[in-house]
Amino acid sequence: MFKKFFLMLLVVVVFMSCGILSGVNNRSNEQSTGNNGQSIRYVEQSMQDQYDAKRWISGPIGGQLIIIGVSGRLSKPDDEIEAAKKDAAEKVAMYHGISGSYEVVNVSGPSGFFDFSHDATLDLRPDHNYEQYVELLTFDPEKDVFRGQATMFFGEAATFVRFKYNPSGSLINYSPENGTSRPSWVNGANLPHFEGYTTVVGFAGKRYTLRETIYKSCESAAATLISTAPTTGDIKDIDVVGYSSSTTIKFRSEGTLSNFQILGHWIDQNGAVSTLAIARVSK
Image 1 (cartoon, rainbow, N blue to C red):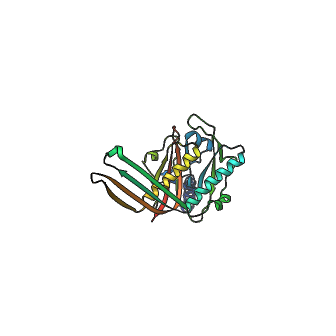
Image 2: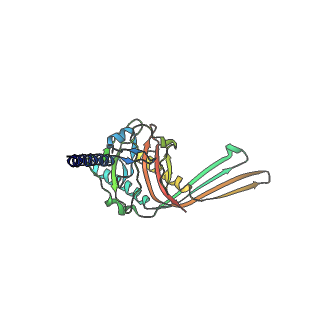
Image 3: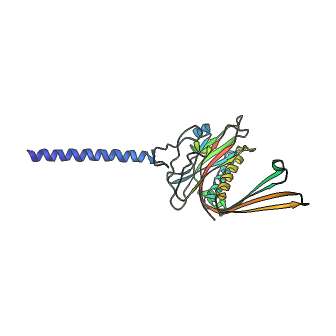
């Protein structure tokens, strides 16, 4: 009698243990670990939702590199897709490596603030031609394409396409936060951190087209990353006729970016664009 009761109890314990483990496994499939060690669940937003929120999410998600390609509105829808694909392919080329330099020259004269000039020069050289990546980009024409209309803030209508790219090698584990409000990283707060990577925020004021504004914001992020490389400086004082002088301060950063990835764009109400980006920086 006691033996039969013990066997029945053992069966119940094993059954309950299997049920608990099954529940844990199911929950682990629904959740992923956030960048700050918190368990969060990321649900892919529709292109319409991202457009309404002016918050575009991209980067290494679900084992693939998500890239948002942008095109102006053209006479043929297929041409818009090709233009957006070219834009995305250029970002893939940047992922595979960028060599560049960022130079700032400030000149001040004896009159102080009113006798001051500032000049910045950015030179970016992707290590690979983007054309080879065009055919490697995939998308779902039913859910990954959104054609936005012109608004009072965006004088130009734009087409957004969410592409997927499978790079060789493993990607970092990135869990973007869902939301429709202005992300804190726009102001440089709560930036995600990844070992071996530098995280920055690029910015560009409104340009003639939204596509150009987004591209300039990406360039700004790349320039900021390059500026974190070792910097050389030079200061010169120049005398003029023995009684006035000007001072020239020159700083130059030169380096290489690898695994450059755009994690998201935020489009402000005034048409300016902020870009969250990461890369490995080396001299």
